Amino acid sequence: MKRPEPLHRPSISIQLHTLSFYYKWLHQHWFEVLIGLVFVHLLLAKDVKISFQFKEKAPIALAAPPPKAQQTALFETWDATKTVANTSSTTPKAQSFYNLTFILSPDYAERKGIPLHIVQEKKQVVQNYIDTYLKTAREEKAIYKIPVSITLAQGLLESNAGDSRLSKESNNHFGIKCRSKCKGCTCRNYHDDDYYDMFRVFDNPWQSYREHSILLGGSRYKHLKEYGNNYEKWAHGLKKAGYATDKKYADKLIKIIEVLRLYQYD
Image (cartoon, rainbow, N blue to C red; front, side):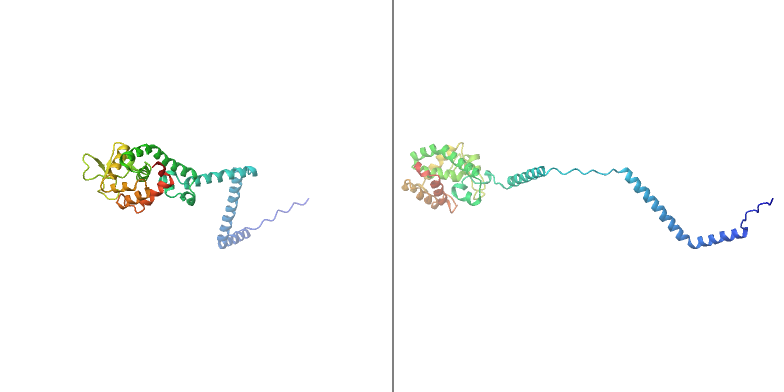
């Protein structure tokens, strides 16, 4: 029986030669090998990270849009809210208007588009003033012969239908100033025409009406009584005699009397 031949093994010289070859190749191409290893490492790391993120984060379910009818209702609600907000910021308030604005300019509200309720509110303030002081104006006419229409028209204009500071704080409805012969009078400055202008302070509105009658009975205005109940001549006479510095003072008095028909009380 024949013995098997031993396996062929490379000689030590051949092994050393092979190792030397690989060593030289690695020495020459070490940078390329390093880059390749880094690339493989990053690729493996990225795969692991992506896999991990997909496992951690569950997909977000989007809510279904509301029905079309509901969308329309929501839009209309938002639009109505916006409209109300804009209206509240642009709609004028009654306090922003002079009480006699719609008396002196009857067509102002229509031209400017002022809401009817504001016009009515202002006219009511004016009517309340007339109702309050009509009796007093009639009593003053009986004694001092001053037309009721003139007294009421001046009271309305000078006091802004009772809302001016002078009428509220000093009961002065006619812009009556302190005079040099005024003894024991209480006076107050309101920075009207001049810093030194002093206006009378009264205990009540009736005193203001009585002082107005006395003033128009003085030498400066007494000639106006010759006009009787002619309110137009009275108005121009008061302006000419210097009762007010407003150039349109007479025209304003006449307008107030005619629009409010105050002449019927004369």
